[in-house]
Amino acid sequence: QKGNIYGCQFHPEKSGKDGLQVLKNFEKICKS
Image 1: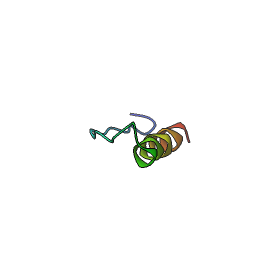
Image 2: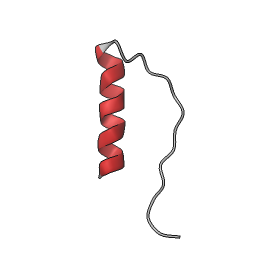
Image 3: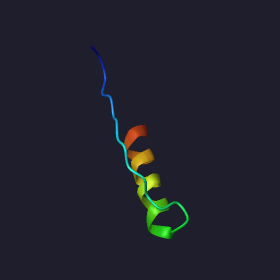
Image 4: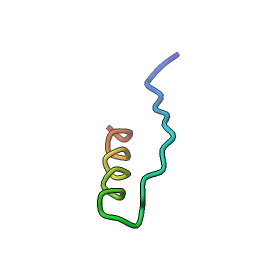
């Protein structure tokens, strides 16, 4: 075993500003 594994299941509203920000924040966390 090495490294971290991230998993999630959620359905933010991608058409809204807040939903897009949730996805961007999650992507940033996964890339760090």
